[in-house]
Image: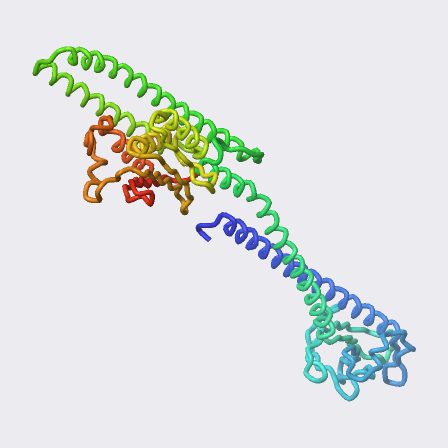
Length: 447
């Protein structure tokens, strides 16, 4: 639960809903029990008043006028009872009683209190009774004090309360299920913008989009705006760094070129030393600028470059560059529309060096193939040239190393390719080509 905002909200809401429903159920049950008890006591009071109004004394015993009472008073052991006790000098229990008592007698306290009293008694069959008693003094001279009692079985109260409780808890259970479903749907709808935000962030991270797009709630809009602002500043920073690197390269290359040209006009040890050091400085500048540019691109977010368009443009350029040798530069059919997670300029730099190197050594043909392998896009550049022995293939990537000077170059291109590829988390390998020459396998992260 600690790792899920959805579960936190769901469990917290359900806990409060369960607590509220439990308190509601307990409160309504208590109110209904009190209401039923009050009605019960009111019925006892009505029965007691009717019994008092119908009572008379004649022939030394109580006489009752016909009563319009509850029919349950005439049913044996029905739960409704009345009883008249004689008090005074010659007390006698149950001088008169309802037919519902049958042959039973209600046991009452010996000394009644003043006025009407509520009592709890043990009735027939051991049931608990709720009773109401009253002491009556009749106007007849020979009439003793009489105690009138009406009682009802408490089970008659518990039964409707239990039935009400069952229906109430069933209704509250249905309500709880409905609330659970409503809360789950509400959480799904409320958290849907967060899922959309996650997908948009993933699109930016993988390079599918350059900024967060879409309609978000007011609570998330400031966050989205701030993130887009950070992305824009990041892109601007990368562009400024790239421009500054280009300016630095131009500023350094110009005096180096002047020094190299001046040294080339002289054939002295000092001139040769100046020329060698100027060329070494130029290679160092090119290498470090390529590494810095790739590092900035890797740290940038949302950078992605389609590979087919730059690759086709490079093949056309190389065909014109090596046109005097009639070398054919071909793209293998079935190339997927992959995207490189990096800068287009770096992709041109790496592919351009590899294809140009293959074109220098190819006899008639250079074949480029593009494949998608998991999270990477793989380029294979094959030529039909003489190839390179396996023992020398690793040395060809070392800075400044040339395995043959007859084709030109400074021995820096392959080192730049390897540095850029490794900076992006990829790599480059030299293998034997099926065409008979050299195969260069370049692996780069795919967007």
